Length: 125
Image 1 (cartoon, rainbow, N blue to C red):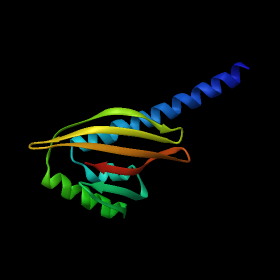
Image 2 (image 1 turned 180 degrees about the vertical axis):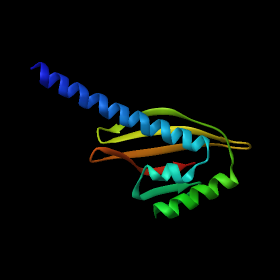
Image 3 (image 1 turned 120 degrees about the vertical axis):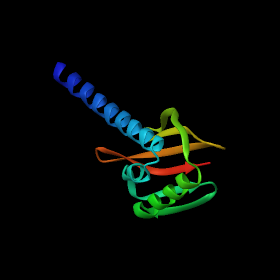
Image 4 (image 1 turned 120 degrees about the horizontal axis):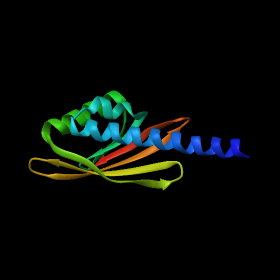
């Protein structure tokens, strides 16, 4: 019985550490305007919405669109304001992206794919 409880606890802790590590890495990448790093945590195709323009993009296209946004709206600060779950399979994070002249809400929906956590959709409004 002790072995089973230990196994369950280690699985929960490993999930939590992967989730936290991904959230932290993406949060830092936004602060550095590192579009390639952000997109590297995504699925092969990512639903991307930036200021009303929405589409499903391959990682290379999504990287270019994020770079364009960062060039037009350089970051002053970024931080996640909420880390939670929409469902058991889809964690959700929201953040505040502050540029010199505007503030934006960033919403990221994650998806468990095997043992990895990937960005399924990213919205900047």
